[in-house]
Image 1 (cartoon, helix red, strand yellow):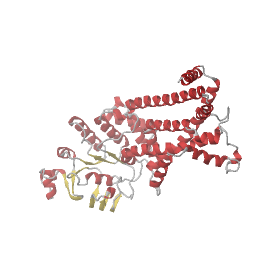
Image 2: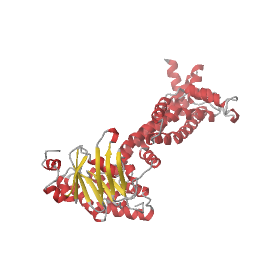
Image 3: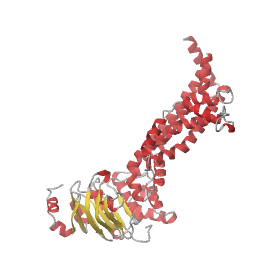
Image 4: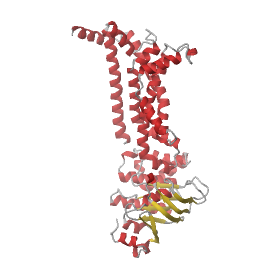
Length: 234
Length: 238
């Protein structure tokens, strides 16, 4: 019990004095996961909207696959990206393995299905409500999809948060493709795993506190934004 | 209006419709000419709303043929107002601008039309307000402002006053009359026989998915030709 209390107070002290080592790790984590979320949004939002609004052969099984891919195991994604980026792999010549770029790629692959699948569901619900009106006004499929993406933007912000939350909290994929190299690819989750195994709890706990604080802050922000948007836009 | 050639008259030959695989309309022969105010009447489930959607091109016929003027596909120059207005999550002004943008009307011309349309329906003061927080009556008026700004040659109205209080309903009726006075052909459904008497030039009566008669409104209300219509007017079929 003393160890936990002592570790916790040391962890709080680390966070409170903005320990440079801790700040570096948090910064890299945010950089990797925010970049991955941005890339996944660029791919996943239009993809989800297109599947929601479009009618094409193979759409129902595609939706099943997309929904299933929301549960992709991070270690499997890490392994696949590792095979792609390893020296013998098809993309080995780019020399990306064990770099933050490799971690971004892995996290992007991991969360794109989440963003696309949730976007599809939200846009499909909106499409059921708007379809006749938009068709009556002469909106084609592409224009309708863009309109629905904009009209559901506050719900989609929550989707992006879910994607970001998944990215920043996962450990398996970034451990495999990043290698957990200190000062280069060591992020919050991989540090927590490593330091815990070494018995160095203050840094692990400190990062854990930061991780939870980030997720809480983002969700609180999303909640406030949604409440404001509901009152402002209906 | 988008198209140089008119989308009128609309001709239906032996049209059937089965939205979602459920047969609703069958054997509809109809010609809608420009200029009139036509009201579709009939009991619940007769197929009035489905026919309106077929005429507007929202539902494809499962059999038969429909043409809009010389066009085999629905041309521009049409608009529709639904029983429950659907507004985008943006201001009243931006909702009309969106519709005009889709019709290819932009810039100063669009701004002028929007201001004029909002004046027409009495919503100028609410132009900046988000459309979805307006009351039901205001949203329906905004839907008519959208129609007013688009200046279509024909507008389809699906029970446009069904969910409004009497005052708002009369206000919407006045807008309908104004839109018609500008040369727009009106085709609407309603369950309100008094409203139909006030607004209709002619009545199309549907029963069980079939068009049983088309009669000038005064004649229809004085002495309908079909047994089904007579029973409907006497309140035996609702």
